[in-house]
Length: 424
Picture (cartoon, rainbow, N blue to C red):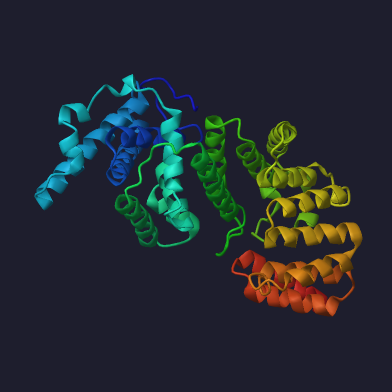
C-alpha cells in the first residue's frame, strides 16, 4: 500500500504525489461504496467526482487526516445528490434512496471502515465480467479500478474522448441491465474470472508496449498502469502463480522499453538493441518473481512467457541467448495453450536452433490459419527467416507487403526500410 504524506502536507502530481495516491485509493473507495449502497453506475460516477475534487483541492490545501475516508464521505454526498436529482427529474423513487436513509448514507464514519481486500478484488472481477466485451472490460477497469479519467483512457488508446465515454457508458448500462452484483464469486467462478482479469491486464500492457496503431511505437502510460494494477492484484492474491507470472512478464518485457526506439522514434529490433539501456532493476525483480513461483508447480501461460523473457534478458548479447532453452519453453507453451502468435514466436526459436529452413516450415503451416495468413507479423517474420536463408528477393517482397499491412507507423517505416535495403 502506498504510504501517504501526513495530514496537511503539501502534495504534488509527480511520482509519489497526489495522482499516485488517488489511483491507489480509487478501487478502495469505489469498492466500499458498491458494498454499502449497490448501484454500481451511480457509485462509479460519485467516486470519479470525489477523485476529481481531491485532485483539485489536495495539492493546494494538503492532505486530509484520512484521505480514504475523505473520498468515501465526499463520494457518498455526491451519490445522494445524484439520487435526489434523479428523483426530481423522473418523479419516482430510486431504490437506493428508499433502502438507505440519508443519515445512514453518510455514516458510519469513513475511518471506521478499514480497507477491504475482498471489496477491491470483487470490483476488479466485476469490471471483467463475461457479459462485457473485451474493449468494455479494459475501459471500465482503467476507469473504475485504475482511477484514470475518460480523457486519459481515450488519449492512451488514441480515440476521441466521446468514443471512450460511450464505451464506458455502455459497459455501465450492461451492468445495470444485467443486474450482476459485485460480490466475490464462488471458488470455481473466481478462478475463471481471475483468468479474465489477467487477460485484460495483459492486453492493456501489450497495447502500451507495442501500440496497435498510430505514430508512436509505445504508449508508456498504459504499460505503467498495467504494471501498477498487476502489482496491486499480486498483493491481493500473492499465492496465485499466474498473477506472479504476469507481473514478472510485464517487468521483464518493459525493462527493454528504453532500447526499443531511437531518439526519432524509429523501431530497434531485439538483435540490435543496446542492452546497456535495459532496466536491470526491473530485470532483477522479474527474474526473482518467476524463479520463486516456477518450482511451486501448476505452471501456466504467463509463467512460461515470463521464463522466456527472463532467458532473453539474461543474455549479454543476441549470440549469447540460450535458444534451445527458449525453444523448449515455447514447446511447453504450445502444449499448454496453443495460440497462433505463440507458434509465430516459436518459429523464430526453431530457426535459431535448427536453421531458417526449419523455421520457415513452421511458418508454412501457420500460414494455413486464416487469422494469420495475411497478418503483417507473420509476413515480417517470414521475411526475416528468408533473409537468413539467403532468399533476399522473397524477403524484400515480404517486408514490403508487411509494411503495407502494418497499422503502427514506426513498424511500417522499419519494414519499408528493410525492403528497400534488400532491394538495393
